[in-house]
Length: 122
Image 1 (cartoon, helix red, strand yellow):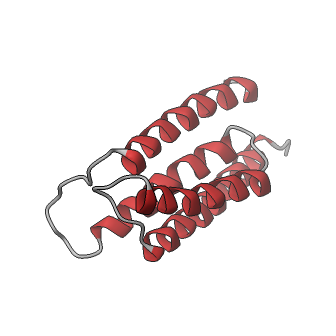
Image 2 (cartoon, rainbow, N blue to C red):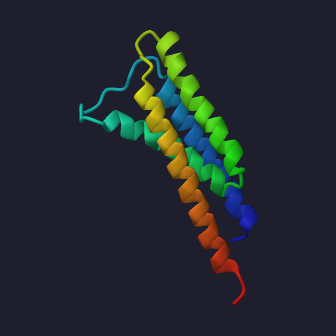
């Protein structure tokens, strides 16, 4: 598979991950769940890790991607606090979001580096 085909596939995964992220963050009422302590933070980290990882693998510059996702993390908590009556903003959710961004970008860079090494002539 060519690198441009891989990038197009990862761009589609990136778009899907962003769509899931938007639904999770902006659904008018908070999602119900099993009430496991810390699960909310894992969900927050995951919905930011996925687009960060997919974006890096799609070829988006990590610095720009990270900055945009971190800005969105902060903005989403403000929107939840002030514009969604059944939701509330939480600083710790934003921290989990930023951790997800950092992990996703780091993992994406590791995967890209591994792919580059496998393609290098020996």
